[in-house]
Amino acid sequence: MANETGERRNLGAEIRWDDRGLIPAIVQDAHTGQVLTLAYMNQESLQRTLESGETWFWSRSRGELWHKGATSGNTQRVVDIRYDCDGDTLLVRVEPSGPACHTGQQSCFYRHLPGGTEAGPPPVTGGVLAHLAAVILDRKAHPRPGSYTRQLFDAGLPRIVKKVGEEAIETLIAAQSEGDERLVSEVADLVYHALVLLAARDLSWAEVEAELARRFG
Image 1: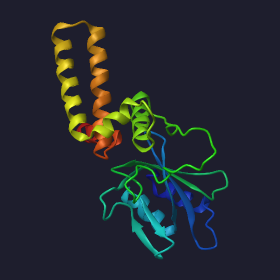
Image 2: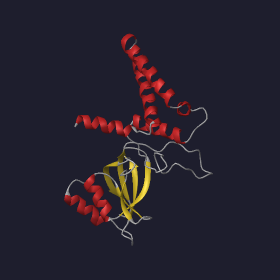
Image 3: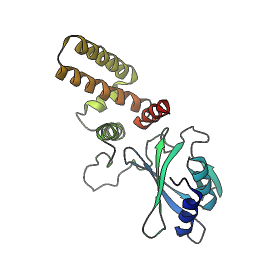
Image 4: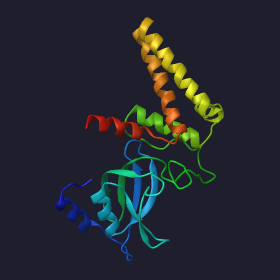
């Protein structure tokens, strides 16, 4: 995200607004790479986004500015804003504090047209944890036969919470009386089940990273 006034001015100068003074803005999770939504910005909403560090858009149906998450609490903290080679589309990379879609889905792009290959998890960047978190969210949204992750979601929050507790106890036991390989394995199990718990509560790994970043100042 541009931090200097000059950079902001240059960004605005490079943008090719349409005849309504709008530009499409693709919103992407900065950690998982998942496309969250497609919205539109005008010059004022872009300026508010740059100044506030959270996404603002222009509602074509209501004809007014709207601050994402102002009523739901599902705000999006902007990491950076990019524009394509033609200057007619923005890519807004964010850290979401909750689902992007008004339906409660993490992404607005959760439905599939028939006839394609089997839907898989969204393409991700950001390392193994981000990839695992994205796969877990995909299993939640698109059940697959035999998926252990989906079985946990189907069993409900009490079962997921119980599994996190069980894995925490097994991690403690491994730390006290078992070898390094066993400890690493138990920690991996604990992290996986913790990610499932976050997804079950409609929370994201990005929110954990944001909290860790806050603690580091």
